[in-house]
Image (cartoon, rainbow, N blue to C red; front, side, top):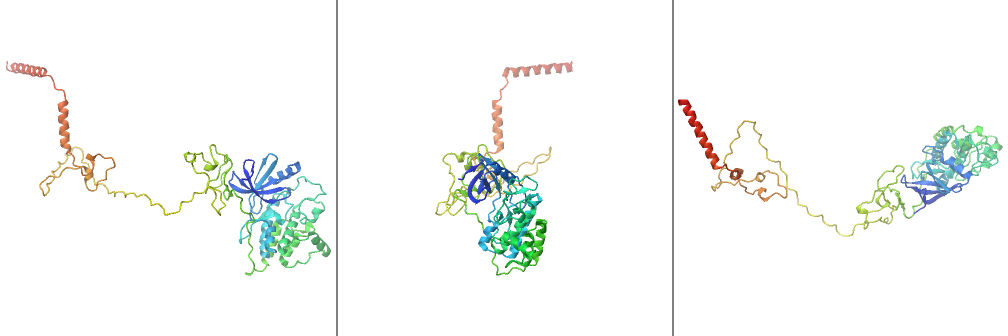
Length: 478
């Protein structure tokens, strides 16, 4: 596993190196994605001020690669950006040499679009060069440019960190006024774009000093270099004029002139070799896959397969890296299977399902089919209150002369099957005693169990009744 920086960024492998520090491919344990992390090499006050300036830039544009977040750990600091995989324009020229003019127009248009957004923020880049112009890995499709590395960029009006006798930037891409100690300004970035245009059209680094001498000697625009179309040379020469007042006023003005020049270029031929932007990043080292490290540090939540990127602050109480961030359950106790190693030829380090043993698959257990369910027999409507119920008719005798036994309702055709556990006497087809007889026997039993009145009490009651009757008859006849 790589070094964990500030409890969040796990450094995977170095992918670049610059004047201020190294650029690493890193795994962001909070956002669950790979990022490019620039680790500051020095920690003196001068470097920290530049770091603060660079990480403070927040330019949201499809052709600008600006910092997204930063972190500090002990004596080191870093900031992160999106991970761009297609390399730089320097890689592209190294693979193909001079590029077709129409392809160059597409690259320059996107570069000027991103530079216009930077200038709109009142920021001077000061280091526009092929190595700082990155490409997405789009294959043979339309290229996608990202302007990067704002390490020495500054806002106009901010105090300079160097003296007027020092020039900051890359040798060979300085504007003439920079060599004379002028304040950084937008025309200097446009001059560097002109040098990039010549680099893409000729396949080699232009000689800036020789260009200035040619402009000065002729007192105007020199002739176009070999294999550079005149329409494109007019745009590049305007960008490369030694006098900043005679260049384009803005990146937007240069884009408009470039669009007019592209209309004058011949159509591409079918014999032209297609330009393909490859993935310049090497394979992930052992222990890392497309979804991150195989094992996350303790206390950090891993991203389950298929989940979208999570929000910030993904520390789980009771979670475990081996359970996908959820609290451990009974299946995760001792004896449960641990993380599975990546399959051969696969980059993923996520736990995979164990392989099934070879051989014929076991037949599934036989399940008897459920009995067909038929609708129950219709129930006759209940008669209204006060209407006498019809007397049931006795069952007709069979041909043998015997009476059919009374059976439960569930034995009738169309009745619902009885659930399991039904008593034998209540199952379908089992003869039972008619309900009337059951009621008479119960009534007799209840009568036998009732307490009877005493014989003397009954005799006294009869005697008293006879006396009262005799008195009544005498009274009527007297």
